[in-house]
Length: 272
Ligand SMILES: Nc1ncnc2c1ncn2[C@@H]1O[C@H](COP(=O)(O)OP(=O)(O)O)[C@@H](O)[C@H]1O
Ligand SMILES: [Mg+2]
Picture 1 (spheres, helix red, strand yellow):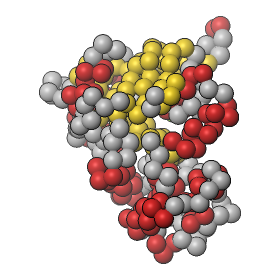
Picture 2 (tube, helix red, strand yellow):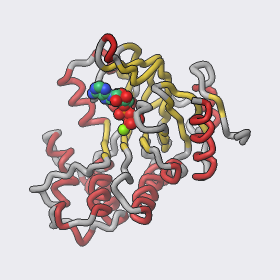
Picture 3 (cartoon, rainbow, N blue to C red):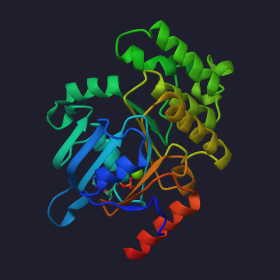
């Protein structure tokens, strides 16, 4: 594991490392965590899910967050997206410090600036594909502009959903449902899209199709994506992989093959 893109990740090297790896050097991060800790429960039952995590997510990048089950990946995503509150530390989305926002402000911010793709596709069963994709606009009390309409048409075409627009979720395969969820997450061109194990419920060929779309959204359209995964193949689609172990960020690497990602995971498990 002495490959040259490999960088030990401590709070003092984190920003240097991300500048080396990224193409957006110097640009303001789309999201920033500063010394974020999160505990659940009290006393003997207390779980420290995140321990002093500092991380910048840069615009236009596809970042994978890896780590074993229980290492804090979902907690990290929820806190960065304002779905949950840090116990200590600061979270910024763009230049908005979200740590002090109330629930209403957080809801609005998420609606306008963040997209989500989950392992369970979370489509609305009573709405057809078209209406599911347009849901973020409806929730925001507006219609897609002509420009956004063209973008949605492109997404629908690229995702192969053109013949499915009037179908409801139960009439679609798992892979098709996840592609609808991706179209919905990208439709408003959010500042940042979070994907939590987006291929977890898909067979590997279908999963690769979904990962291709996410990578293309970043490479060809400048979309910023943060994807939580424990799958080295999924992580190999990202252009940066950060590793969590027991709630701490312990390592990061640049673009890597599945074998390279697996080697880091193995090293971290041995060190644990
Ligand atoms: N709402 C919660 N209440 C209590 N403990 C939680 C809660 N959410 C997560 N945890 C604990 O925090 C740790 C990290 O969980 P999580 O972020 O879901 O890990 P991962 O996504 O990497 O599997 C685990 O020990 C988990 O049991
Ligand atoms: Mg999780």
